[in-house]
Length: 103
Image (cartoon, rainbow, N blue to C red; front, side):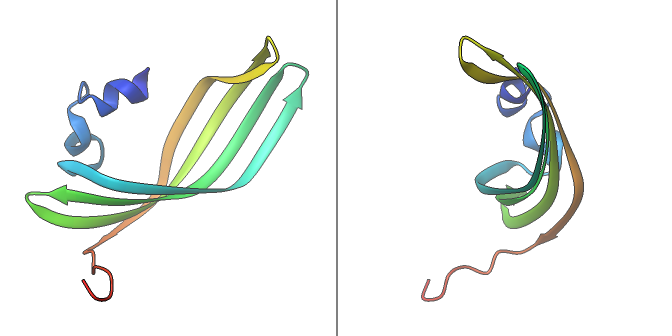
């Protein structure tokens, strides 16, 4: 629910969350996944990198962010679902997009 509210701009939108006016595209790469299983409960610690093409003040920017997800899963009716998620950013850098060759 909190992620949906963030994306709808209820917390001030992307400018207040990560300092950009709009996120045009993103790719998330997840790695280093640690799962601790306890019956029908699981704790999952996932690290990754988020690549964001964004716009700030009518200028293109490219953000690369280290992210971490701490999730709690529950299994019910044969399905695992996330019941709690903590999303944090561990580092970030920003650069100007260069475009693809031939464009």
